[in-house]
Image (cartoon, rainbow, N blue to C red; front, side, top):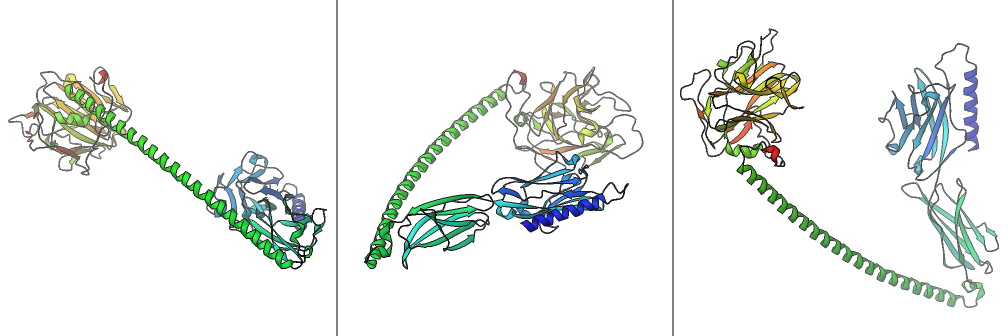
Length: 560
């Protein structure tokens, strides 16, 4: 250790001499790295700091800082580009190191090592680099740990004395053993063996043959040389244990063996009985806890099931009793509406619209020409009565201007026109950066986000059109319809952006079948044909079925 200190001091003095010999006006990037001259002591399981600083003091925030062991590649901690770099870090330091950044601007950098291990013991190098110039300094970390209290016991007579053994474990570094008699006399001759476990901690066993029957108490001390801490244990050796005190050495040996066997047998029996009783008690307690826990879990599950069934039945009965006024539960609402298979009518499309997907998807063509107003298209289905619904999937809906809903068959859709109920449009969509319903005198904002799928529920019998978020089943908005609405068509509009509106495929049986026109024009009023025993829906884009369940939302006056 003295040689290490001389080498470290010599390295520092050489670096300082080189520094002060720099010519005036030399490079401002040159500096000297200094570390602690004395070894740093760390206790096993604790935390330790490895400090280094540069001279002259300067900001090291933008430097490359590295702490490593014997090789540059054996990195303990790397700080580069103002952040920790973990690619080259040794696995044993992963998650156990951190950098103190409080004094980087003053040239001081300190690395924390947490949960110190025996393998952390040894030399470290701190390396600082700025541009092409770099310097480094060495520092020593001494790890120390105090292990168990030594255990001392007599193993029997040996030669002309009594053999006493002292054992201890969990020490680091290798501990020192001392034997003393009751009068303070040290014993210099004894055997000693050491072993290290997988964590690098030392176990020690020392054997001493005591030949003087007057020695009395024998004390075994285990000392940590780094911390200068020790633990000791004493044992009293009765005079009859010494062979020379009795002329009947064979009888002594036999008596000692019999005594030890009796003690061991009694201890083993007591320990076995105690262990069996403790295991039986623990097993009984575990079974009792498991039984009680199972009972509570079953009661809670039954209670939750009953409450859920009761609440679900209550909500559905309320809904089915007044569904026409309800604005919630899109999936339940489907039970009263016919799923309508809507296809787009290319003859009604604006020239700047592109129809694809078997006439189920519409986008705005990539053109530099100003469309001169909203670009719209109608569904081929003309509806004059009944209840029906269809679903539309919306992609890129929050960065384009678009709308969807229903309109009268006689509305004007050339050049610029306004979409609102007074002019025959019942529409919601993304306008002026908002998801809103189109009303007069101003738009009504609905939600901050655009739903991925919207359901349009048209009820010509009761006179309203409602829009639902088909992802979570929530109600978005409802328009009232007048009795003089006339023939209605599904309506789709794109004004700008890369939005796509895709009709999801549906097949079903009417709950209350909507009545199409008997002889509509071929371009705008083609009749719809609906048949089947049950209905289902899926998106025409990818064929995926919509969400099976809607959240159970509270039913109250606001839903009526």
